[in-house]
Length: 476
Image 1 (cartoon, rainbow, N blue to C red):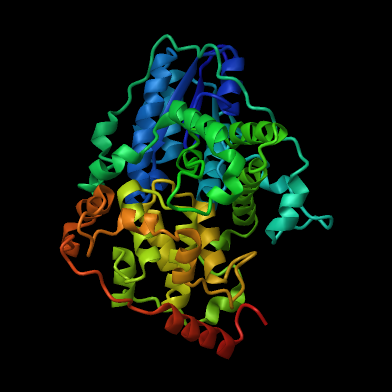
Image 2: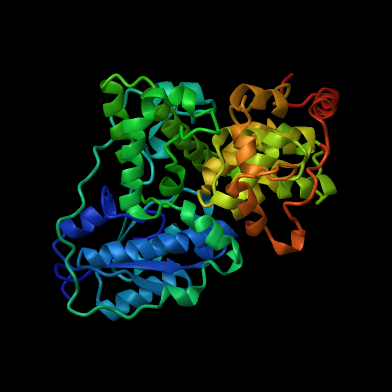
């Protein structure tokens, strides 16, 4: 087939949208037929339970959006290079376009795919879109990557990211579509078991819902976001992490809306922009120091005597039964909604790594199994920040007291009462849903007594500071 008329394969991954999609825009601009495809390869197949289920929902929503636009999403399973080679052979496609990812496994896969396609004489192009700034475009005056957030923010705050691209008016279809698989056969939510029906009502699925979510946030919340984002009992955040993680909305769209809000005098919008750049910073670090995902970013922490066993205390933490109400409420919120308030994430991470002196990787892996907004860079940086082993980390002596944190950010206990049912005469229905969501093997019922603390805030702090100071870690 002539390369000027041969189809372009658009390989979807974590960019499940039509608007502000540089690879899709470029494919449509060729004037050639566009064949969108999603491949369930090893990297997608090995996701944790909740992220894999949520990805499956996102792929279904994308398929529906493409169908409404007169196109189609072809589903294939197998190694990406082999699946793409088969599609090229079946369709005569002369090009494959995709949006870049930045974690080391995806980079290695994409590098191999690009080489294999070019060896076949097929054009292979990758595009931005998942980030505001490509990681290699932000550097210090000496050409080094940034290691601290505030200088990173100062380096990019004056930049003008690319304006969001409009949704293509037309996606040209091929004369004949290749065959594909049925996503139901992939059973991407099988491991969720009964948790799926609990979490599903809390999912805001697809591009249209993500755009509506952003608009509502800008209209109602962003003006006071600098304060409201720390209050777990109120609707005070954007909630966009779920959609950004799968690219159902682009950071450029969010940034553009935030900038407009700031120019309109909504002061909290600057904090929102900073949070978008915090996400960028996580990717910047992951790109330049991939060990962020698998080992202590501060290598001097390699000798720290973390607990790495599944102790009774770790089990209590996972179950939301530590006896520390802020910790338990946040964990239960995650099981019912698939997400956790950011203040809660800091508290549960600090409690696990400092009060329980447990390795941050145990928490990182658990979140990677349970969060529908799981993101490799943000999850790793958040855990290492809380543990003290990461870049721009909380200093070793900062041990969040979950009781005083609750007094400060949930003084009326609205948040903990929403999520903890034990010992309450009329528990909130959401608190009861937790018992329906968790594994039956845990044997938990709302009639159980609420546990006493497995480690008190005072004892945990003393033990953590003793461990840090005796081994001279993290701050001296």
